[in-house]
Length: 110
Image (tube, rainbow, N blue to C red; front, side, top):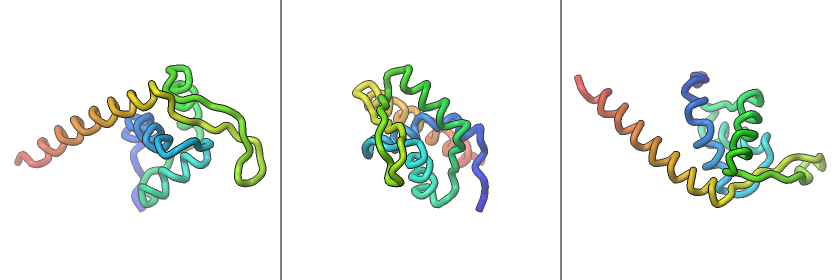
């Protein structure tokens, strides 16, 4: 298994989290597990990156949070997308598409 570069993940963390929350409300650990599972264990989001990002996204109005009870019967903050978060997700997806197309163009040029 190859580790993902943290700087690449940092640049895409908002996109990954917003896309994950588009599935429905989740707590932080659930977000990390989902991203890791869906990426076939390639992407690993560390708590030290995730929670500051969640806090920033909440301040920006992209997500909201409320306390709930997890599957383990523990208190956990559940995060969900807001309308602004759905708009931001669309922008992030467009930006990611432009970036990956540009990188692909460079890689295809001999």
